[in-house]
Image (cartoon, rainbow, N blue to C red; front, side):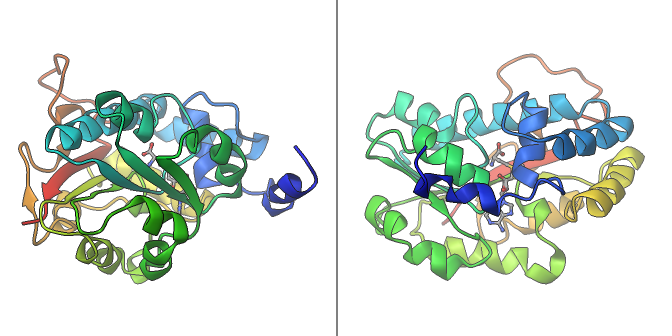
Length: 267
Ligand code: SAM
């Protein structure tokens, strides 16, 4: 990397865990530091299955993107996209439809550094390093404007991210702002930490204390994000139960119930 492309390094705070890097730890990635691994080690004490939870989230991301492609969606706004991993949104989407366009949005400097090269690998994908809490900035971004045609349906993805927004940051208003910008026939895809067990409540305390974010909302609160849209079957459910492609046990574990998700269509 040249001098200019090393600028991101100074923006990285290795004294505190970051959401993107901690998630990279549970996805068995390499873009993380000791402080991130130490954070995950604390979460493992409460949720031993946390690595599996991350895998369930990536699996529903894959199923959800393919579902939206089947509904005719060809353009995706992946908000809070994370560090590149296996089977990123554009790989899943473009395998099904090579013309599909994906804009990734993340505010972590590591995503800028590692994402640009790996995620923006063709002219139909781009990485925007910006804060998704400012929809006007994101929607007006040059790459978003270039790749997304707002006259045609869009797949708006808020996968594993809304729980990192505090209530006073108005996550509902943020969802509404993005969905107001896209036409009828667009889809909203959300996965979210859920207040679904004693362990989840303990995990919330650890996330808030050690990471600073992590709001485990109730099923009703998560469902509320979809207000005004038509939830597709099976609604807002534990991740392994959303259109499963493999057999699921009748009794779910704490980890299998830790995140809920769903997809809805804008009427
Ligand atoms: N969507 C991916 C997935 O589900 O596999 C990644 C989820 S990861 C848990 C959440 C991502 O959101 C992180 O990469 C983090 O940097 C990013 N993020 C957190 N707050 C953000 C914000 N305000 N604006 C943009 N990105 C944000």
